[in-house]
Length: 386
Image 1 (cartoon, rainbow, N blue to C red):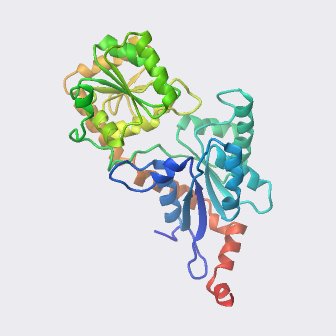
Image 2: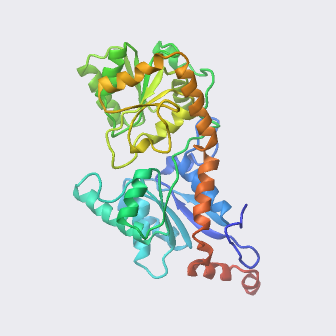
């Protein structure tokens, strides 16, 4: 309940907390809609900070690709809030600049990346320096991977971290009948095709070859035009005649593709950030039998043979061997039911928000100098003077 995080202000004032999301799409999807699911980062931070006794406000830039410009633009909101929850990217620039000024905000960082892993180009190097600084000054770092949390403990033992899983809108992503015409448009039957979802950092050839090995149609879904171009070039080079790549389809159609798939194959190629988790948790909530890499990314999300089938390596033989298990009588139904059950139990917004709220309460952010100053200025006595 609001105030349970220790908001002991005269008159019960609630300290402002700015939440800087990655982009306007995440900001829009922080609300409820019949046409699309909500997105977990905004929902999780808003609920957790509210329950911890703060007054959260969600914000996002019009063009997050202009990292420096957006970072400078959002320095003002960060400066005006005793607490700032920031995401990797432009928001880290805002927090970095704020940390160079007197009386900085108390920062909570949500990051998909540990510095000095991944690309070595100059821009990545500079952003890693910014991210490293923000990690060091953060009161809490939120990570979606247990392996990343272990790595952070080695590199930054004094920084408090917490694992909060990527979660899905389970009221929206759920099993059910096919409600749109997407399968009819593609001339596909329910339970027939292999589904592959995701944007950059995915292997495009392996899903095609797996679908060909299994003699099943392939449906590739992405929201990135460049990924669509690469997928279609792969279709041509491998003579994939029964493959479809769909770009930015409406979310109700994507939900139906999850519901109707024989299986969904996740084929992330990077390990320095936990790629594929959004598709994993959306598919699990929809009850889709999933093929996912047997990697540290799956830890805490899916157990092999229970919530999904985990394959050992990014090869046709390995994935086809895992997929063959779906022919076992009753296994697909058991995996579907278990995946949905674990989504309802712990891979959902309520559970994730409660985990984050507990971590935030332990920080005692209402006792920071900026929070105390804000509470004094907005006490009933001060308001009466003004």
